[in-house]
Image (cartoon, rainbow, N blue to C red; front, side):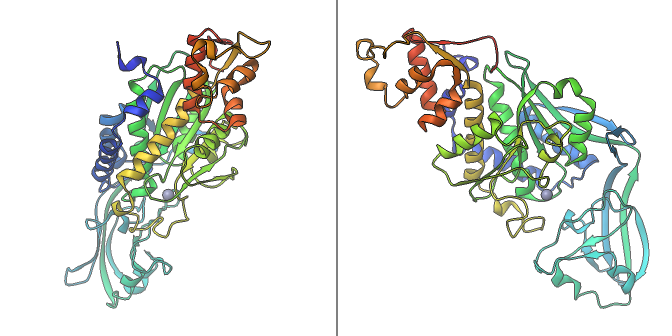
Length: 440
Ligand code: ZN
């Protein structure tokens, strides 16, 4: 019987049709791309309902005004239309052409303004003169428009009509959560941000990789439970951390996923703990993947690992990206569009995260049954497989104190090969789980 629920992560990885999954992830990103998202509002709800079809999500609603640690859930922002028109009614800036044209969280505004007044509400980036920059004013009431620097020169009239048809009212902050229950209550957290409007790599790429990961894990029997959070940056994790103290205590490992669709090398930012299992496993998986990568120490910048790794929590949560935020020229501009994503990069990112999960699942301690001298592998028909599957490494270091990660690091062998070796040695009665009931 080959029911999917009995497959290992490695068996699933071998069977994946990566071309097909890459194009499914890309298609989801394409569907999500036009939606105007922010840290609250209907754009986030619409996004999460789309993601639900791949990942299976519960939508959570947190009322405006709720307090978590040093933060208050803001008013909910929604927008229908916005433009700047000249007095002949010709629109110079139009939200309908790109949702990036509106300063995120712009309060409602309607009126005639002078050129000087208007210019104070226009945002552009001289370093990227042809692109619309992405800007917000979440926690200070303001209105504005973002335009390419080249477009600024076109505002030569004395007066303009401005319309921002938005609402900023008491409502909710919305996030999505999926819990895949494993055989133990210890958890792996996968978190990705859903608050950016039409920007593809930051972070539709993280959203679609996390959604596909959830879909793949649903078909597996795992020992860890997997909690997926699709949250608005900063305030989302803070609200979740503040309202789920019991769940926080169950998290053993975690990853923030972002910027995973471009063709750059992988970047892993370690947790604040620096040498947590997730940090060592991620390093080992990247090292044995044959793909280009870089490792970075934790710093209190970047994505939501800042919250999970704040000193009061100090969770073992790292961040996996390809080219990091702020380090590609299209970052936070209209040039971060679907052209930047490739189905192949998305599927490579999926494989990298699945391999990491395979390693987390397999990282146990074993006890070798023969401890005096090597067991006679030839007699058991295992000698031919010894090199490829690290059998001598497994037999020597399975003394109860070294886990598979220690053995993987010492031998330089991939978890996938070592796990194959564990299965062979278990079948031959040469290796036994030290403590099968515990997740570690
Ligand atoms: Zn961003």
